[in-house]
Length: 523
Image 1 (spheres, helix red, strand yellow):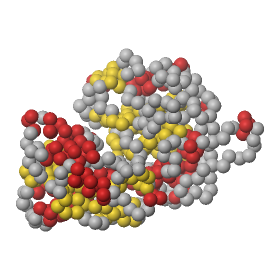
Image 2 (cartoon, one colour):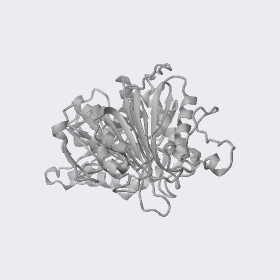
Image 3 (cartoon, helix red, strand yellow):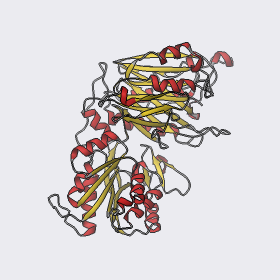
Image 4 (cartoon, one colour):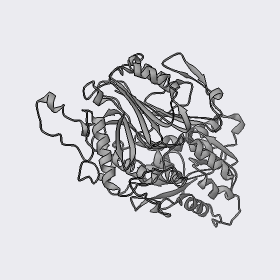
């Protein structure tokens, strides 16, 4: 199948290094020889290059690879044709204007719902193609020019967004709308669908979604990986060509770049594969995966910009984050401690906040613990958490990895006596590895494990089961919900005891409706 490359940057940055390696995959080190394309945002405009020639042999690609164009936002695509002829109209990225904004789209995979019939002139049929519709669409404004499912699904997504909004959506609202469309596209054809895309919407913002998989009879895995380079920078060496750069010599303290690719482009860097059903919004060189994080970016003035449609507003109460306060009170109640906001009693010596985000959860528990570690994958969120001053230590990384590292490090054998996770399990399907790691981290001291979880509701048509007995589902909003019986079985399997839990707590809102879940305290 095809391959994708995207970059989202904090400062205008050239993409020559990454594109040099990516270009080789277009017919030299890999088989993607059926054309290539590139979209580069410059202010409100977008500069595009398309060529049906293999990228590795294209004079246009050679020119671009040596031309230091700087941008906040770009995407590129090399094509291995599985649908549609090898021709210019089928080369990604595709581009459309909506709301006075240039939207771009590049896709890797196969989307059975949007497989188009052959070109009418080739098939001898002049009947118009019936386009699938998403959401509440009643009128089709955008139509594919070429023959690919990729362009068809792009047009369908734009038609759905245009039909839904009469004002320019804020970033959290747009995030949730795209989540819902992705779920609708995949639903019912989960096993056959491979749906990885980059969606650019203006000079600052890019969305990436991954529904990975392999084609029938193929061992090639199609997913999406990303990494963030920021200060202090290190050297990086490309996999596809003998070329390396010491970014510490070329970049400054304010520079930061997120790179998204189908397969890692470099050796020795910490590429992370996106999870199945995960939607990330990239802004300022960082990934965001929670609506309240997107709301923070919107409030900083980095939302969509349009002269053609009035801007929508963020409802002050819509993206409030109350889980930390609720979980702290329940934990104090379970332990027989004073849960009032002004209580200064310390009842845990060493605690870790898994998925600490911007530090709102740490701020709630700070008064209860002696030494507090926060861990989060997002460097910018970790920086905000550090700036709050409520953590003794901040670690950028995976929640499970930090606990495993603590267990294996002789200098850190003290372990923890309190582990908590606010709104983390909505991004993890299988909780077994997490439960196992937390149990090990609490073994030396004993202690408490507190967390929130969205619980499966009684609307199976809105949920997508991850296996017959998985115990969790991927909801239409691309967040995981878990069965209560599944959490109870893990509690017993790993030797925990339930101290206290809630039955139906409002954890957040989605589409104006309350989302219920559980707060659980284990020992």
